[in-house]
Length: 233
Image (cartoon, helix red, strand yellow):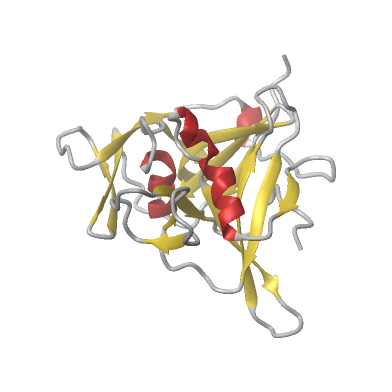
């Protein structure tokens, strides 16, 4: 099978990346440390579209080598640090796989054409989006991450709008991937969405994930627009 270039999507900062690979996962996802266009980055593959990997990455600003990316959330405050050993049980640890050399194809980001990317489906409310992202929890699997990014300013009021959404295929064998999304007028200030299927209250954003009776969904802020989501407004 011919190897295809992946789609690289940059997340906002190291906390967003640590939340992506560690928070709410049964086992933290491995993080790959490699050089991309001269920058040292941490990267993780979360999806595949048209036989091309979708890789989310963050720049390693400290350029620090290590063996694990450690993440914890205590009292509403997140910490993400690079460490050499697993010693503190209050952290979740993503093993860092240090890549010396990738095949040239994997070091180039694929161009996004008209026939590539997610098919966008706009939802009516935050509850519908929460149900999309949380459906896997029925099978005791981790929920899908929610990606957050800023749209261009609205021409009518010169204010930015925010897109929050999650990528999902309808079945394991489906070759089409959809991006279910919602438009927000305000920027969420908390990194998690709290949702309950047992209560009538609407989902709300939260800094904590320890209240009983709720399903929590992690928000991952991107550094810019999502390159695989077009025509969403």
